[in-house]
Length: 288
Image 1: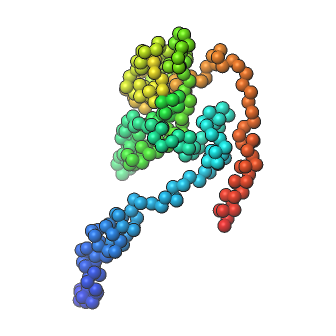
Image 2: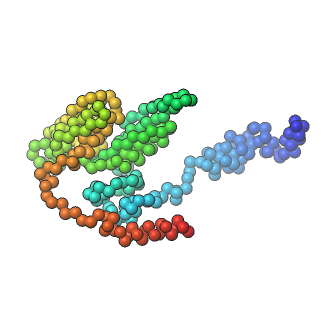
Image 3: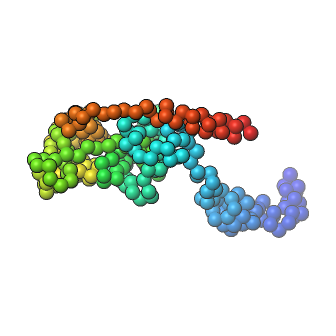
C-alpha cells in the first residue's frame, strides 16, 4: 500500500503532488489554487469563491404581506396611515422604506451571556438589547438571543423596528412653542421594574437614569421627570418598563382628542384590486 501511494504521488503533476502532501496545493489554505486568496478553488477570501461579496440583486426586497406590497408600491406613504388602522407590521423593510439611510438611529443597550444547562454541559448564548428611534416621536425596543453576538444584534435591530411605536408629546403649563414633554403622567411596568414619567417645565431636561434617558432621547422627548421602583438593575425589564410607559401616551383620551375622527375604509379594502393584481403576478412568476 505504501509503494502504491508513493507511485501515485510521483506520477501526479507538481501542483497535485503538493496538494496530496498537505502543502500549498489546489485546495490549500494559503494562496493556492486559481480562485484568488482563500481556500484554493473554494476560496472564502477575495477570490471568486464564497467570499463576503454577494449578489446585489438578492438583497432586493420582495414583500410577502399585503402591507408590504402596498408600502413598496408607494400606496401607503406614512407610518401614521399604518397606526391609524392598527395594521400589524411583519417586515422590517417597511420601516426602512419610510426612513432615508441614517435617519433611524439604533443603539445597543446591553449584550449579556445567558446559559442553559444540558446533558453535555452548559450552552452559552448571547442576549442583545437594542433601541431604535428617530428623535421625532417614534421609538422601538428589541431583544434577541443567538449563538453569536453579531447575529443577536442584527436580530434585535429587526425586532426593534417591528415594535416601533408613536410617542405623543405635550406641554407643561402654557401651550407655547413646540411640544416638549409627555402630555400626562404615565406608568409602565415589566417584571418588578416600574417607571413613571411626569411632565416637566421647559428647560428641565431628562431627569432619569442612564438607560431610560437613552430611550427618551431617541423618542425626541426633551423635558421629563421620572420615578422608578423595583429592581432597576435588571436592564431589560427597566428598559421595557420605560418603553411601555412611552407607548401608553396615546392610550389616554385627553380633551384635545375629543374631536370626532372620520374613519375611512381600511387600506386593504380601498386597494383590494391592486392587491389582487400584484398577488396574481407573484403566483405566475412562482409557477414559471
